[in-house]
Image 1 (cartoon, rainbow, N blue to C red):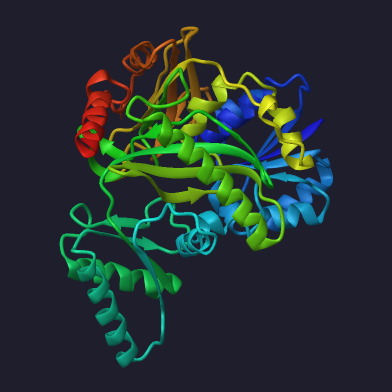
Image 2: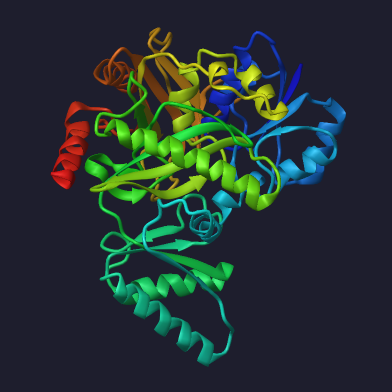
Length: 451
């Protein structure tokens, strides 16, 4: 068996490659990578570093190696229709086609889809489109935007309506100080992509629920909480994710049982809505970003692939054969009993360049990892490369994900932290992810919201 893996520069694809390599099928992994990844190279039969958005080159390699199927990791090639082009030459994909991938690539499409199919999980929102380029049209746009932001009481979220590497969302009180700032950013979005989505700003605690999906067949993974802020105590700029944790019961400490059941129901409703709206089956990973609020849960956004870091927590817990799951997704034979996860907790802490995300001044500098790793820790390579002598070199972003695994979150955090403390070089990580104190703050917030 041969599997074509399309990989970016994060540790997500190392985690995917690792899960593939553990399969009883022992697949030959052909990895097309945006940058050289030491972890992928160790398990792949072939690693080719290339521009993964060069679809003609990807297709040439696919025709050459004739893989049984492909897995596409990053959002850009999924949103740009790589699955459509691979399937057109006979390569089935564990990734949705372009029309279905709008669930991630267009915030407006997602909100409109939920509204059309009566999925009551959105905040108040409006989608604004560019109406013209004249001075009069611009003045009218600003007037309409100002009026709606005022209607929301000055508590709002402005979203870029296209893929922007996880950095297209700005919130009042955090990134936007005034309504005028909100109008300016909305106009910037309209200038760049022609549409923007403005939503009510919700108060609550965020979490993620990822599901394997084949049409209306859905099998859920454990719930995860991500930490986007660059620095401890949830301070600093938003990042791709500084770390994540899961609990041994596959829920999260601050969630009520009804919250998780509702998220599962919404993922199923969205999968069915996509099939009806687009006329074909969604095949791949459906990643629901949710927020628990005072009266239930709401959808923040959807992604059309494994999350990063979420994949680093989830795939090491997968007891089922990952290749079997991929084949079931492709063939429309996905069932709950095909998917099983260990009842363990995980804590992932991303180790990054010291100045991330503000600058990349440490790029190319060496760092060292402890060896051997303890049996309760997994390590996944992201934006890190090897020099000619085997020395590990930093990229400008998130270098390695350290994942502790244990019977409790506390034990998993302790395992991850112990390894992070042994890493040497101009690096940093968030010490507070997975700690009793930070999780306790989430629990207390939900108690106060719902009291």
